[in-house]
Image 1 (tube, rainbow, N blue to C red):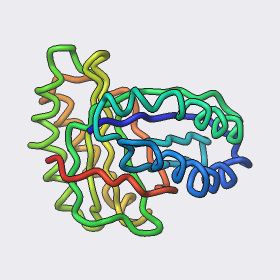
Image 2: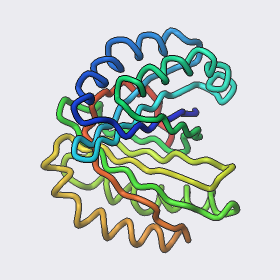
Image 3: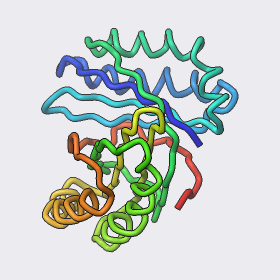
Length: 206
């Protein structure tokens, strides 16, 4: 399974309209493209950071969709008022305890691995953060996406509510420190989001 993410630093006053457009217009268009299996959108309303991610059955399907997806992406960026930053990923791990609910929130962590350290990072994610986060109240799902060409990776953990996300912060920080040390990766960024659109129908990949 593969994914394409588009990050836009939006005007705060444009976020609600952008979310509605992605949910009502973009998602049906993408799901009509062969190989697309879903779409999600994360929103940080304080900073204006919005990330829309589409999931694909194969890398070939993702690449083949670019001609149709490009104009759709550009329209979203125009509505949000920012420039789109596009990244391509392999979905290495996806574990879902249950389907997300309204009010769900996500903590995403970006790391940089050595080019020969990606597989080690995947193994560590399965052994350290995944079981630790799964044990917390309000845990919904967790994923790890990687780019083998750049060594970048991003993990995302979804919780049922803002309260559950907040309650997990101390434990998550401790686990993050242990995991980055074990995997030998550099932490780049951590951000918390509202899960504004949740239709990323990726199967279990644990």
